Length: 126
Image (cartoon, rainbow, N blue to C red; front, side, top):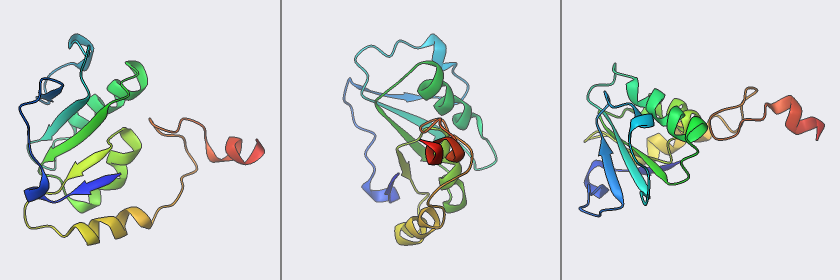
């Protein structure tokens, strides 16, 4: 997962980028020609964007970039990566190097994820 500081993120006016409100059902949005989807966390206790990311990756097969924006905290990054996010834009004032250390603490997981669906035991058996 790529980590961006608050100041490094640009919403962009590109027609290939959409910003999806967290109450939108991704199954009802046309993804034709879209290369990046920004999913917003209005506050860290609102996790609807996790479900949106999972739907986009697993059910809809979206291959483009999924970016987490809004009230993104360091302790959320591992869950974000496992549900399908590629990029996280940290809340203003958070240190990107501390965020990277959090991701580095967990090099692998026993369970599969939205991105890597095969569980660890199956990978080891192969």
